Image (cartoon, rainbow, N blue to C red):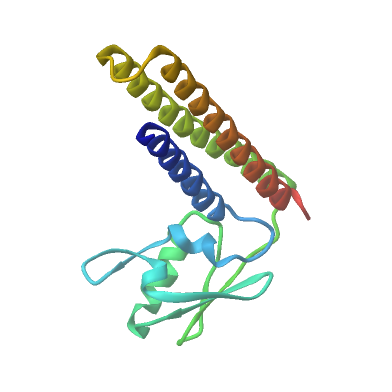
Length: 183
């Protein structure tokens, strides 16, 4: 049924978006995805850092940024400083080293709260997909395209999908929270 396929696609997108958001949250170790949110003024606009440079993590407490265009070194360094991530990059003339400091307990709790907020936004997106699917079922019932039993079956399947995606979000949250709280 297209209703279920559409609902599942929307819920999948919500969970994928949540995964991408979770990847930007700092843990105790250096992960290149931390810098995905950094925008650099370059070539007449604001460009994502990952389109202007290669970001690697040679060890758990350091990120190394290799710009494709060496003339952007200063702009990249300023953008990382201004990003609000609490990182202090150092420019050695050909690449930028970004030491990732260990998180304090207070900062870990703050990140855990942020993760819970992100997870709730993901759940809301899943519920919106459920609501849209149920509205479509109601519309088809009203038009007489499907029978009452078929409508009830579809609503039950949509609810089962919603529950399954809610569990996926809970598992993602638990794993990321464990990662953030680990010392």
